[in-house]
Amino acid sequence: MAVSTETPGMSGMSGSSPADFDVVVAGGGPVGLMLAAELRLGGASVVVVERLTEPSTGLKAGTLNRPSIEALHRRGLLPALRRAQQQDEWFVSFLSGGEGGERALPRFAGHFAAIPLSEALLDDSDPELSDLHPLDLVALVHQKRIEEILAEHAAALGVELRRGVELTDFAEDADGVTVETSDGPVRCGWLVGCDGGRSEVRKRAGFDFPGTEPEITAYHAVADITGTQDLGVGWQVSPTGVYINDPARRRITTIAFGGAPAERHAPATADELRASIRHVTGADVTINAITSLTRFTDNARQATTYRRGRVLLAGDSAHVHSPFGGQGLNLGLGDAVNLGWKLAATARGTAPDGLLDTYTAERHPLGAWVLDWTRAQIALMRPEPHARALRQVVGDLAGTTDGTTHLAKKIAGIGQRYDLPGDHPLVGAGVPDYDLADGSRLSDHVHDGKALLLDPAGSLRDAAEAYRDRMRTITSAPRGDDVPAAVLVRPDGFVAWAGEPDRDAVNAALETWLGAPLDVGPGNRV
Image (cartoon, rainbow, N blue to C red; front, side, top):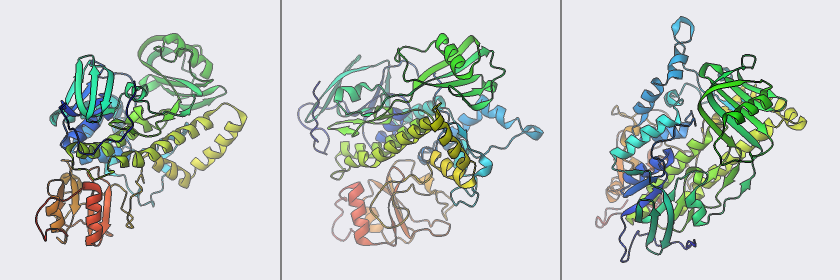
């Protein structure tokens, strides 16, 4: 099906074909739900169509990185994350296993290419790791629970989720998109594919999706298996691959090189799992029962752009890679938070020219970095002499304080930022959760998804008035050292401008990100 690649006007729908919704989101996983919630906060009407009748029960990501937790915290979801973690059986078991019956929760360091990183080597003098960050205490939440939390959040905002409804086709015109579904046609202004690595939206819209072919076939299982008693526990390297054995949770993962399986789209079987365990570990096991079994490769691809006309991509629809390091879920949530407010403003007709184009410009480089980050890990896992020699070198570096700290910060997403105009070091970074003089925290003031102006001196009150429909103002002073005199925060929580009040700079930043001011009469501009 031919899809127009021309960029439509930025003022939403027009013409004789009214829209049922501003946006249709294809895919009701965590990324689609997060995007839908952000769109609703931005004032757009949205429906999510999901082909599955129930949420997936497969074992997926189990950790959140710092930017994802910060984004969820800004929407008031931190208590729900805490409850989800505290109800996890493994988490409860872990905490009760220390001396005296209780173990402290460690800082999460993770692994790089199956080389474990020791929490004890993290540099406590690093200003970003000097103490256990409060948000790191909710890093261990499984994707299934995150999806449940986001579904409740989206529903509370009025998002309509249609389960058991499959997108079958769509046609774009100058005024919008007609989406054909198994439940009938839906007319909308914009369509976003959040429908996974095999995205129908991406394929039908004709997005280029270049990348590298898979080198591995991996199996991840929760199962009752006998014959693994002599295997090492944790990450292990063998002459034929890599595996991770977690007998306490009845989990095993095998990683074998040789490319993708012949039947890569067919469901994984117990016989395949048994053969892979034997090939990678040498153990001849018996599989008695399987609770969960998934198969994956390191197919690494990225759409060359995340937008073609009125069709956009987010999450795995825009980029796929191996799951090592748990980057996929976090990368997709970042896409959703970045896109939501921009697309909502575009649908409402308040977006400045070019705002929607900044979605690809800001998110594509991060996606490319994640693909290379996962490719590097695959290269270090290869069972051949050159890779094993390099693995020893990287392992030695990872065994140092500087090496562990660098890798752990990358895994945690610490330091992620966008290349935005401005000289202040905060510009382009996520805004700190300042402790304010009135007893609140900055995160308490951004649950509604509006932009925020931190203006303790009241120097920018006229600007605040001119954008009162899109921006919240805080005049309570932040506590701490090196706090800028004023800060403008975009709806996604990233700093657009900071420093001493500069009227021209503030006006330029506001119009760049929020569009034209309200017509509030002469003298009401900064």
